[in-house]
Every structure is written in structure tokens, then in C-alpha cells.
Image 1 (cartoon, rainbow, N blue to C red):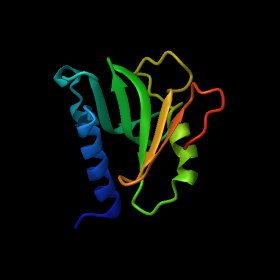
Image 2: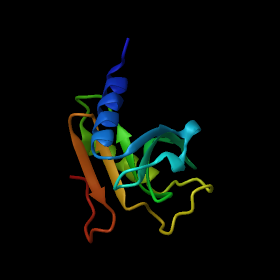
Image 3: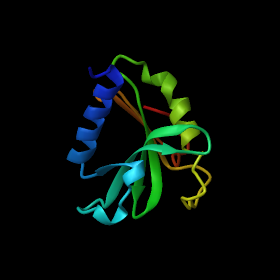
Image 4: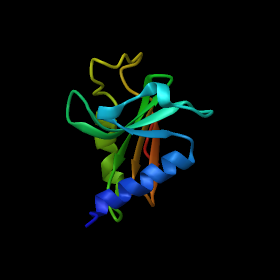
Length: 125
């Protein structure tokens, strides 16, 4: 039986693919398999310094953002802190040029919030 969070991840996967991202499991990461105009990979279940993020967004082999997946009906307002925490917890095997990844998303597969850390007043919206 599919859990509500698994259903949300299926919907998020479909949205990422429709937007041109290659969705891959962390254990099977293959940056050479990427094609298309974005050249981006959405890696599932990436181990961080603290916990695992549901998705790590990578463009040209550089992490640029995270997505925290939640089941439908979850109030995403309270999830922004979790995705922001993950955005600063990059593991040593990824070279990151900033203290924080610029993009953080929270999504239920039907509703998505977004924050750009480069904004002068970054907030999830």
C-alpha cells in the first residue's frame, strides 16, 4: 500500500521530470546520464551532515537547492525551517561555494513553497 508521503514523492518526481530534471536515487547517482536544457539532477534521499534531505537539486554537478517532501495536507509554513536547515548541511563530498544553497522548496506534490536565500528578505512563499 502506498503511504501519503510516498504518493507525494511520486507526484514530486513527476513534476520534476516534466520540468526537465533527471530524478535519481542517491545510491545510483550518475551525473553523465543527464540530458536536456537544464542538465539538472534531483537526487533522492541524500545523506547530509545532519539527517537526509528528500531531494538535493544539482546543476552542472553543483548542489543548488533542496526539496523537503511532505504528505498532502501538511501545513508547509512550518516546514520551511527544515528545508533551510538542510540547505546548510551539505556533506563534504559536494563542494559548495556558499554557506547555504540558494534554493529551498517544500512540497506536498499538490502545493509547493519556495525560498531563494539570495533574496534580500528571504522567506518561504
